[in-house]
Amino acid sequence: MAGLRDLKGCGTALVTPFQSDGRIDEKALERLVDFQIRGGIDFLVPCGTTGENATLTLEEHLRVIEIVKKRAGGKVPIIAGAGGYNTAKVIDMAKRVASLGVDGLLSVTPYYNKPTQEGLFQHFRAIAEAVDLPMIMYNVPGRTSTNLLPDTVVRLSTMDTIVGIKEASGDISQIGELAVKVPDHFKIISGDDANTLPIIALGGVGVISVVSNQAPSMVKELTHHCLAGNFKKARELQRKLYPLMKLNFIETNPIPVKAGLAMMGFIEESYRLPMVCMAKENKEKLRRAMKELGLI
View (cartoon, rainbow, N blue to C red):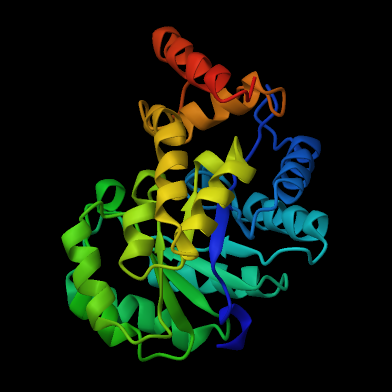
C-alpha cells in the first residue's frame, strides 16, 4: 500500500513514561517525541513491547498514540502497536487505532496460545482483511514462544495490506531465507539493534530500535550508512554503540532503556508491575556505557 511504500531507516520503539503514581506522564511523552524528531528519526512506533503495551488499558493505549501523533505533527510516520493473542480483540483494537489516522500498524504474533503456522496465517489474514491500513508483522519468538516462519510470511506477503515484517528472531539464517523468498516490495525491518547491520546487508530496509530512545541521531546514522552501503562507517558506529545495545537487554526490555532515559532526565524511572526497577549493579554498568557515549 502507498502509505508505507517508502518506509525505511530508523524507527524508535517508544517507551511509555509513567508518573510515580502509575499514570501516563503525558508531558514526558511529548518531550520524548520532540527529542526523537530533533534527532532526525525516520518514524515512530508507540505502544509496542518497549511501550509496555501489555499493561495499558485500551483507553490508555489509544491516548498514547493520539499524543504521539499530535506531537509529531506529520513530521514522521507513526506506526502504532496493535497486537495480542485474541484475534477478534486485536481486530477491534486495530480498527480503533486506525481511526486515529496513523500511517500503519505493528502487530506481534500471538503469544501464550502458541498457534500453528496455519493459525498464524489465518490470524494475520483476518486482521488484514478487516482493517484497511498497512501492517507490519512482528516476529519475536523469544517473547512469544511462536516463530513466524519464512514460508508463512511469503503466503502473507501476497495480501495488499501486509507490507513487511519486524524480524527479532535473532536467526540470521532464517532472515536470509526470508530475504530470498519474499517479493521485492516486502519490507524486512530489524527488531534487534545489534542485528541491524547484517539484516540490512541481507536486504532489510531499517530497524525498529530500542537504543534510539536514548541515542536517536547515532542509531539513525548507523542505519543510513548501512542503507547507503557504507559498511565501513556502519561497523565503526556498531562497535561504538554495541555496549549500549547489549546493556539495554541485560534485564527485560524496557527496564534498562527507561532507566537510561531517567538518567538523561527525560522520564521518571517508573514501571508497571510485573516490570520493576533495574538492579543496582546493572544500572551502574548502563550508566558507564551511557557516559562513554556522552549521553549523560
